Amino acid sequence: MPWPASADLLAPLAPWFDRVRRDLPWRARELDAPHPDPYAVLVSELMLQQTQVATVVPYFTRWMAQFPGPEALAEADEDTIHKAWEGLGYYRRARFLKAAAASVAAEGWPGDLEGLAGLPGLGPYTAAAVGSIAFQWPAPALDGNAFRVLARLLLIEGDPRRAAADLRAWLAPALAAHGPSRMTQAIMELGATVCGPTPACGACPLGDRCAARLAGRTGAIPPAAKRTKPKASLLWLVAFEAEGHLLLHPPAAKGLLAGLWRWPALGAAEFPPQAADQEPAPLQAWPGWTQVYTHRREQVSPLHLRLGTRFKAAEGLRWVSLADVGTLPLGKRDQRLRGLMATPGQPPLEAPDLAALIRACAAPSG
Ligand code: SF4
Image 1 (cartoon, rainbow, N blue to C red):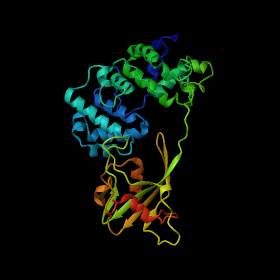
Image 2: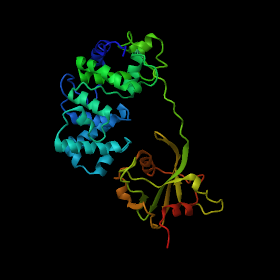
Image 3: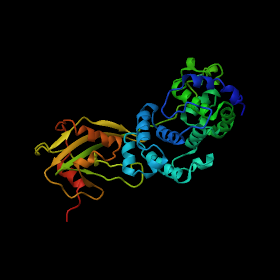
């Protein structure tokens, strides 16, 4: 590695971070001692995976009031946990957090990085982040922000993730010299507030030593990842209501949507439009939206259909009383329809054939 020593190169980051650090509810004031509440660090790191700081702050505050320690979280039931996580997305994180809390409540905190990495939901990055911020272990935590900062600073060509092992070995002495918690958070902070995709080099404490800046190549390092835009699928998201009940899918035990209740979502292509001479269906609609996920997009058309009587629900669907629906954990897309139902809708301009919609959600007769 022909790179300058990390403790020297990164030295200006430490006083810079002490000066500009954002006051975040999970951050300890004292950065030279172990964190007084490692559980708070664990919660924040799990919440911050895939989610912006500004979104996480209110969730973190509510979560810590509701589940103030590993024991309280370990004892909570899954519906309560999913409800508290509702809106943050990637609900697997909530279940991992509960499982990790149960392990800590039963056996105490692991004593080394390997033990932390063995807790549910903690990959190498999260284990290193918790190890350095909570316990002051000199374990470099490399996430997308850190890779971007270090790639520019050291002028690493190509994907910096390929140099992960070398970067970890290079970074460890800087953590030991300037404090693991301070350095880890300083790199995160620089990536989040200064060295973003479009870097603000004029405000950077490392501007005079950054190889990409000195070479005029900050725009090309690291190279942008190639992404193909996923095609949007069209679907009807339908709230069937009858006799004071709504029809929902109960949570799956596993997978991305585990723990979450869902409205029936029916591929629009499979449902013919209502014939022009058909009696208008008792339907309400609201303007649709595009729901964006990591690898797919959905063009969602929300519908609310009021029926006189309940039909026998198909396997995998259940009628739930109106009073209970408000308390169920739903994903972002499905929360949005629940929220819309409290507002007046319109008869839809285009509607799917009502009988076909019901057939798709009813148990086969006979
Ligand atoms: S000088 Fe610019 S590119 Fe280099 S680390 Fe600082 S913000 Fe990033």
